[in-house]
Length: 179
Length: 172
Image (cartoon, rainbow over all chains, first blue to last red; front, side, top):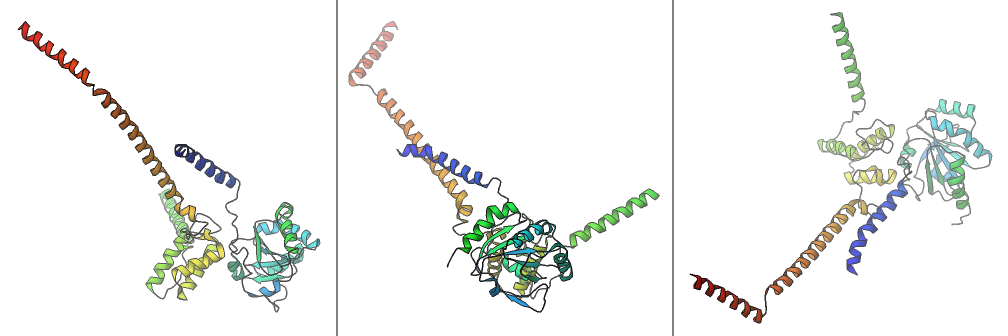
């Protein structure tokens, strides 16, 4: 009996390793899972983009499930996803912007000419909140639940496919959660 | 002559450009102590850039790597320890961010998997080697017991030998 195990073990190890490696095929290694997953939003106090006198803190991000979209005018992929964000906002999905390491006049011009999908924008020219969130490049889109917890991060462009496959199911699942 | 001059000047220019590019990555940070500077140099080689993967943050030109170097410097000046700083980065960017990931349930296989495989290999080699030598030893024992003949056979051999010797003596 023990003799049989000796022969079977290498086979099991090979099959196991093969399975692990196979599941990793096609996975984009540049898309990292957020280290902030299931953590509350980091504390911050930053001005609003359009109305610089208004200060926003992490407490404002509670109450309902929202998308937090990290964007900047220097980021070409942000331009690519912008129209779809406008479309989502049109459907009533609450999106809050995190304007990341950007210039205020440029950002205002962008919103004016391309449309503004955001309820409001957190203006983070030094990337402070971005750093605390673990943002390593724009665009990134976070799903924040009604209790202010980070529940998901998508790295890269949000388009219809990403929304329908990943973000929307999670969004509505979180919305139905009571505690 | 003209050609050589031109060649020299273009080369010098190229050299100037490349050296500029290299120095673009050197931040001018001052440190309270030589120790802190040393820790900074070590840490920026040990922390991995999340954007341009497979580059450490000392080596990377990405804006996020520059931010991370700035934070490492800031934390060192605040008197934070090496471990504090690594934890600070892991909190934000995950285990991915260090080239020496901490030992936990997720990284256990990463750290010990190779050793476990080596151990399994060693054990099976030992097992097979022992098994084989046991088998061999078994065969030898069998051979030996076959070699040892019964008393009757022994006598027969003795008889044959003595008669052979007698024959030889008679011939002589």
